[in-house]
Length: 187
Length: 280
Image (cartoon, rainbow over all chains, first blue to last red; front, side, top):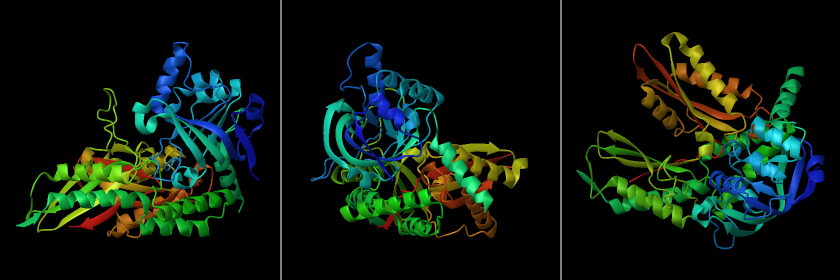
């Protein structure tokens, strides 16, 4: 059974989510990949404002294809998250409560998530055509020069994801695989 | 001599870029559909069904299956008796430029790997691989290659003494370390032999082969099967959250090598393994 969550979210809401939960995300989320993260962290280091309110926000690691006529945004599945590992802790400390991507995260990111109450969601990698249908609106808000890597404000409806790593550090990549292996061994 | 017109090359590459990104090859589709029937772990099964639904939507709506519409890898097989009326490489780049603009595909190439990393804006240059063969054939394969899986690829110069066990260990370890990152279920291309660079090229070429076709040599066909089983025993599963279906196929290509060496390259591709070929 899926949990419905809305974005932005509070620390309490983020802390209530558990690794393995299936969720449907609705509300406002922001896109950012490597190049945009680098700029966001440079702003934080200089004590400047970010181009969006980071408090309670969710960032989606995605570089979409251009919208075809009639689409809010083109295909938009998650990119591999570890490339954002050098940047995520600073954003989490600044108030980021959720990240949507795919693949592993490093120990610094997980430590920041535990300390500040943030969650790492996994969306299905390679399902860009399907996930695009959950994106109802898209507005470019910063770094237009980055093209597909610009920051976009998205309105999403029932965007499907799993909680991969929760705010206690439980990790579905480890437990999910182990559960499957244990179940196969018993047979 | 047979003359090939550059404008025909451009048009072909343009069309292939667009088509490859919306239509998954039949063999890959069949393997995903088959896995939907055989995967017994419930969560893994539901992910496979979502992956199937995704490529069906992409085909129906004619939109990219995945937002990473790739580096445009273009394989040219050119007969020695073929003459082109201009630069073939320039004609291919023009095809990529038109295809990625007209097809609403993502432009993912930066002009320099370190200095500035500025997007070229049109997904050029294409990554072109040339094969010159006898005769007057002219064949183009376009294979958009996503980098989530490319980044998980590895190469190792094994010792001859490491033998086939060393090869197996390296391939399985590469997949295990990649875990959820390359968007499993994956297709694994393995290149064995040659030189450092030839092994990598063989691994990429292995990914161009249909997953329905095994290596013609029984020794390697058996190795492909054994590696597929060992990888699927890892329990990584679709998207890395547990299950049987980690890998859809292992394709191996091999060639002669030096007495002192045993190069092995592992090129990983995701479940959106795209390639399409046309003869001109």
